[in-house]
Length: 305
Image (cartoon, rainbow, N blue to C red; front, side, top):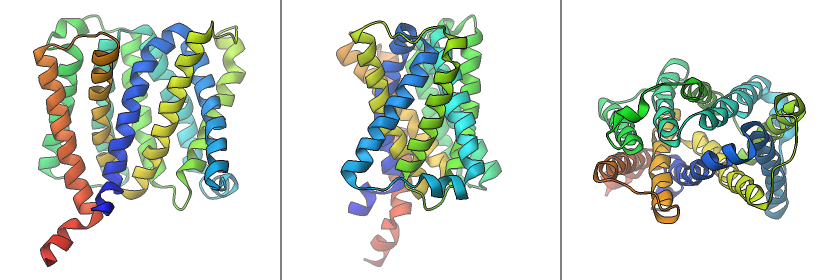
């Protein structure tokens, strides 16, 4: 059973929970601080957090090895995730509503399935494909409450979120191709590059470096902690299981965000939204358990017994 809880799908499940907290902070922080400053500051703060973490855990950062052996994959993650995908997602949330933003992020799961099939030759069963479609539909119902009039008037922000999802989905492929490098090193270097590049662009894109007070600083720290820890587990999960499995399980982050918003931010959940959340939760647990069982080799052990 210990292998089950340490399997790739379970690690992806833990990552999705952390990313759910990120979504809660991201919507308010991008509007309060500004999307470009947020992208730069949370990544650079994440670098500092990872550096301290590496010292505490006595894990040497494998930066030189990563640069030497995985230049192409590193460049892809930097351009498509640390810069392109992050900018499109964060600025998209800045331009649109939280409901529409949550809706359009759901395209990413389907993009990951396609990317895994095209570039990694990953196979997916009909049952698993049905589960993913059910998760996407459930997440859409959760985001809209069944009232699709909230999606009327698609704007630039919505298009940017879909585009960001497309870019981010390919980085699942890039990360899968990186071998024998600690996830801490991957996260450290890609966030260092992304945060530094955006910091250099801030005078052009934003014109100032101020964050506007303690409340905004705390929101940045919230994004930093949950995104950084979520990314660590994300890369660890990709080491152990298929890209489409990780992409599908990450759909549960919308449920986590909805629960947090309901409990602590006084946001309401209608009956139909609750039903959508349950669909996502049940299908995510199904995909997680089914994939974790296979990855951990529990089926073979049970058969021998």
